[in-house]
Image (tube, rainbow, N blue to C red; front, side):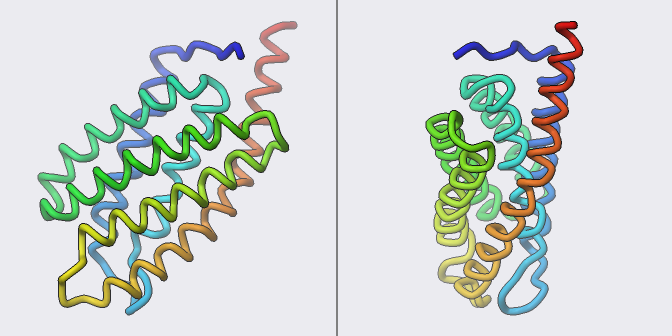
Length: 182
């Protein structure tokens, strides 16, 4: 399959978006809304949107590159702004779930437009939650198990909602490519 090569600007935007999402999520996961939820659950699924858009347009190799660079930037900054345990848990969960998301998305890319991003996001979000919450908060005093379940529920819900911007943006990309050929 042939993929477009991103411009330096496109690569920079994707990488910065990924790093910003992870950094925001690392900070927001420290603030509980209640015993079932933290604010990080609302921002983190956007990382799958970024990854899936890059994967759709530029292929899995470029999506992995964005994930690794976004991972490195976000973890480095997170180590300065978040506790080391959260930064480490986030980094491990992020890269494992992103690489899984990219692989699943790539295998399903030829199906219906929504299948690849939905299935990849659901599977990756489950892995992310297990790894992150198991490392970041296991053994602590907070209600981390209920936070993990609540956050996973919100991640899955937001992941479904991210299908709308995904569809709008891939539709726009197809229109832009058609205009460029004309």
